[in-house]
Amino acid sequence: MKRRSTQNVDNIDLQIIRILQEDSRSNYRDIANKLRIASGTVFNRIRRLEETGVLKCFTILVDPEKIGYGLTAVILIEAHGKSLIEFEEEIVSMSNVVSVYKITGDYNIAITARFRDRHALDEFVSDLMVMPFITRTAANIALNVIKEDSRINRANKPF
Image (cartoon, rainbow, N blue to C red; front, top):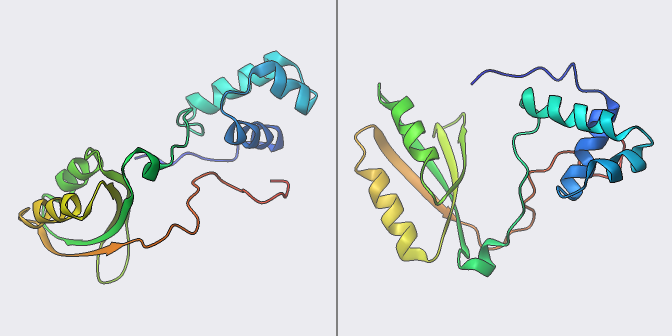
């Protein structure tokens, strides 16, 4: 994936991002009023932020436990071989998987995934272990979620 430069993101863009992170349903007029700029300017900036990949999507945050996915696991994976790219493509398409990271250390991939129960987690890890390029895994169950927020700069400080 190609990295995108942040050099074209200015303070107004960052303020728009902050407002949208608080409520992605905010309309252009409300954003414009808060920032004291024209609605057309907000529209154009949001469109540019989408086109450049700064804004990936507009979505909602759901409490996974309240919809039956109360078990969160962080799974460390050691994988090797030519098929590693194929594995990465396969793992990101799995519905339970929330995040996938290439990492340093004893393992080279870390994933976060959500499950309905420990049997679903066991089945998921068992499916991973039959893949020929995976040499070992370590599944860690989250006992409590202390913080989980992918929004940037959540402090009450200016960007």
